Length: 424
Ligand SMILES: [Zn+2]
Image 1 (cartoon, rainbow, N blue to C red):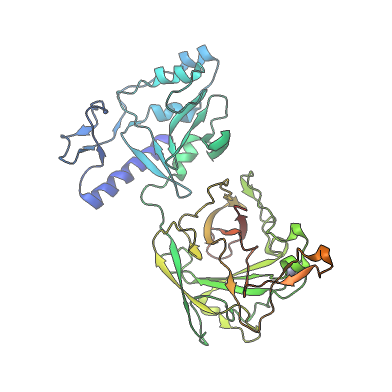
Image 2 (image 1 turned 60 degrees about the vertical axis):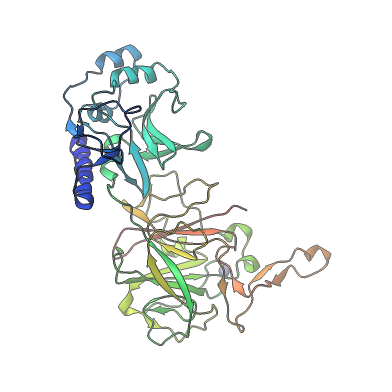
């Protein structure tokens, strides 16, 4: 089973190279570093790279002796992996993050290496013990299988944190995407007057949502929610033809308790969120996300605009710039100091990154819009507990939070979850 998945990945890689360069896959070759492998094809190029091809293994390893000696049972997937194919490079993406396997060919002494790990020796390169290193995750963290685990594939992050990439090596290969990660889009904003039929992407003004959707109110304070922005998913996005509108309560500081100012926490250690966890009627308390066919949107004259209107143009490409106001799809830009809080699935449906809003990106308001109220630190000196913010804008989950929106990959009725990160 795992063999077929590995082959699929290796074959996909070959196809990609053939399409892009009309050659077999290449890796860089340095005779002082590389051992000569049977997988090389031809001689190194003038630029120091050499073609290679994968091949079924020409030996079958028997692990029973090792397992007996160290009283362990190695995961079946791992044993099958070593007995499947030889390759010099195997790279792909898990949830848009790169993982890269160590080369496996006839020069690698698998049993010897395993004995080393099983014996509890520290691996010099990875400085790990009892951990069977398979390669690199996100270009910097080792990933592999713990001797004591249940065959889960984990990445070792900073400070000894482990991040489970997959429940087994077989499942990892199933999820592994070969090829470039989805690049996504980034926003470019332009000030303009809002037009009567507005089926594009924009910040502020009046929402353009189906007439049947009642304008939402905050489930915490009961105030009408403020329309912040809407996105018409661009060509090439899985939701092309659909739009999403986001409303948020800008009375947060003023009328909410501290624990109600942020989105309800997503369960991040659970494998699967239940539909109930993200049921919008309960989960979306101080915000509301509407998802609809773009063509059903009508400009809602019954809404009094507060946030200043700006057109959003989507530029394709990865811009790993945390200051871009909105990044759509592709790969989120995480805070360096934070754990990657990525919900995996809900009700059995995979969840993907929908968009993020930059920290310190605030939403300018029209002069007649009420000011956002903030806590008044002079309150102890007899001043009122709240005062209008000096800046002429509204914040989304406070100005210092980076906001990540996730959704199930459902084309009709996706469910959404939000988490935030801050360096404050
Ligand atoms: Zn509210």
